[in-house]
Amino acid sequence: MKFLHTADLHLDSAFCAATPIEAEQHREEQRSMLVRIFELAGAEECDMILIAGDLFDTVFVTPETARLCIELFSSFEKPIIISPGNHDPYVEGGFYRSFTLPENVYVFSSPELQCFDIPDTRVSVAGYAFTSSALPRDPLDIQAIHRENAENILLLCAHADVNAPTSRYAPVLSSDIERLGFDYAALGHVHNPPHISDKARYSGFPQGRGFDEEGEGGVYIVTVDKNETPIVQRRVISTLRFKHAEVCVDGADTPEEIESRVKDELNTYAKQGITHLRLELYGVVSPDATSDIEKYQKAPGTDFRSLSVIDATLALPDGAYLEKDVTLRGELYRTLRPLLFSDDSAERLRALRALRIGLLAIEGKNFTDGGRA
Image 1 (cartoon, rainbow, N blue to C red):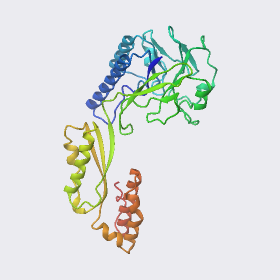
Image 2: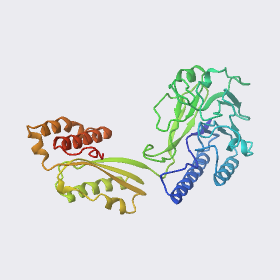
Image 3: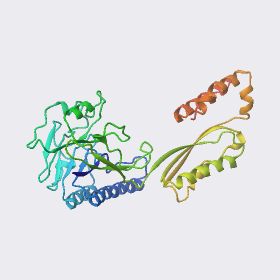
Image 4: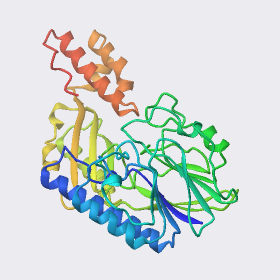
């Protein structure tokens, strides 16, 4: 049995930070992503598609997206199993109850554990549905799985928060997945997932929607047999990528030095196909090295869909002098300097803010606005 495992497509996302035109462009790109997923399933000759929740971002779906889904479902012809998630629960007025879906589409409709024995196959697929925006209990503990054919390959298609017992989003335990003997558990909900086991995986995001979903999104092609370790292959499906990068400009004395380092970084990521890039500049620089970062954002060129530059540098007249300064200024600088070059971006920003505020306070100046970082 060979199938495609995906989840968390979040079709029809609002993209509130974008303009209305940009938001609609993003939604169209999401629909194109869905087309590529079905094309991949056909090219790979998959016997089935498992969608482990959050196919849609909300209960309500645009007519364009609804039409496309039904067309793709119909044209695939083979079984499609859907486990509604917390964003697209099985509720009155939602997609799953408002449209007549093709006969090859199986949708779980209860928070109780259900099981579909797929006709003309040796496969049974268990799962459940969110019927509201939360499911604060483990559905796998509710009942045993009853199947007509116990010799079938047993799959789980589920939207769940694995090993998070206080979660409001189906807090399933990995021990329960193992106990029930699934040959593969196709999971959704966690977009940047940890590894669970060879037989239980989150598919992760198929295409990033922001900088909290960095890199290449994709789906899994899974080949599985009864009581065998599944063969799982990752397939990149995204054409859009997000990347947050950091550029050390420590010691720069002129704007040209900063610009040179920024251009080197831009060239690096342009070659990697990054379409949305965020650069954070950090380090201690000369006041004369202040660079006009807006020009990068106004004229990013054709290599990036969007480019933002964050200036987290600290302009000091003489950092080397502060290293040797015996006053409170020097002591503050020496104490914070290791944190200013931490590998943790958030820690660097906190240290930068602390240093700015501290230096202003030592000089007796108003420091309430000193923490722009």
